Amino acid sequence: MSKHSYTFTHAITRKPGASITNGLRAQDTGTPSLERLLEHHAHYVAVLKSTGAEVTTLVPLEEFPDSVFVEDAALCLPEVAITMRPGTPSRFGEAGIMATTLAKIYDEVATIEGPGTIEGGDILVTEREILIGTSSRTNSSGIEELRAIVSRWNYSVREVQIPKGVLHFKTDCSLLDEETILSTKRLADSGCFKGYRIIHTADGEEACANSIRFNDLVLMPDGFIKTEEILLEAGYDIQKIGNSEAAKLDGGMSCLSLRFSPPQKLG
Ligand code: CIR
Image (cartoon, rainbow, N blue to C red; front, side, top):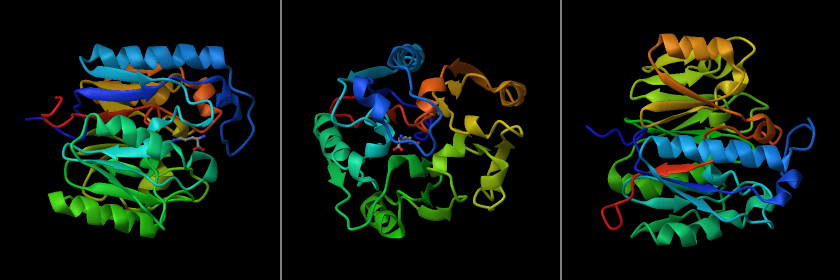
């Protein structure tokens, strides 16, 4: 049976542009190298494709330095695509541009109109529910607007709190399969994953919690050998991707793609 939360026929990515060096970051840990980022991005796209998925890579948007992090601009469900309302001014315009792309794929593209804000990085879709973290980018009003849209298809939405100082909910967690979540201890300790099987990131390796399950693979950032070992022992097929440059902008594996199986129209 198809698992909509981690099996996908398609993905959308956006090639990084030169303006990525001006991307937002919580702390300055150095300017990302565009050349290395392009290499990492090409590897990421190749790994998505290796699972059999069709991957569209959009052109760079120089006027939006963070637009490589396409996940934040939309949520793609099997029935509907929903463009987000980013919670930071330099990213406001990204959602409208993504809407144009998604309108070619989906019959129905819904829009978060506000006044609330919500970003895709705060949304974890599992087989049984949609978990959304409140963060500096996503608030309850944005979550309620999303809830109203997806209730048409009987999705259950649950608002959760994320640890202070964490950019997005999925900065600290990823779905591994229908019952398993990779999470930092600091997030799992809040109890938000009660009822799921939790695999904790190894101590000191919290930065690899932003991984993704994509079809048969788990894509994780390179350099987290203890957590990699834990996941291998648990039976997951791991692909490591260089993430040193995106990490300087607080980006990880989930941020770099929209993952979905489009409706029959173009499917
Ligand atoms: C930002 O601050 O918006 C970007 N520099 C990073 C976005 C990461 N996106 C994500 O976790 N979904």
